[in-house]
Image (cartoon, rainbow, N blue to C red; front, top):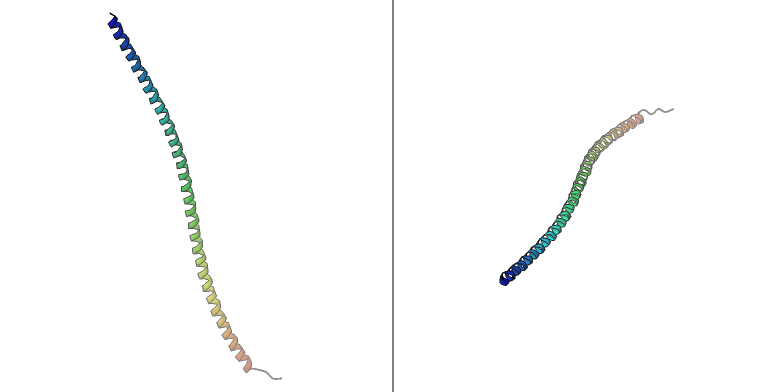
Length: 117
């Protein structure tokens, strides 16, 4: 009977040791799960931050595109205005030439009809 009790005690000790190892393994597993959960939270926070920055970058790019479009429209207006100014300058030059010719003709006519007193 002493052998049975001794075997029983040995099996009990082995069972307790197995339970202790199992408990330690579960505790380690729990720590690992907590660590993984913390890492996932950090990643989620970083992704949220990156998402916000991406939205801001999209807004900034849209603003730059609007400014570029506005600049392009302004450049087209300046070009059209320059062309109009050039055409007006040519018209003024042609009118000045015509006026100079007319003044020359008038001067010639005045010289012919000088009245002496």
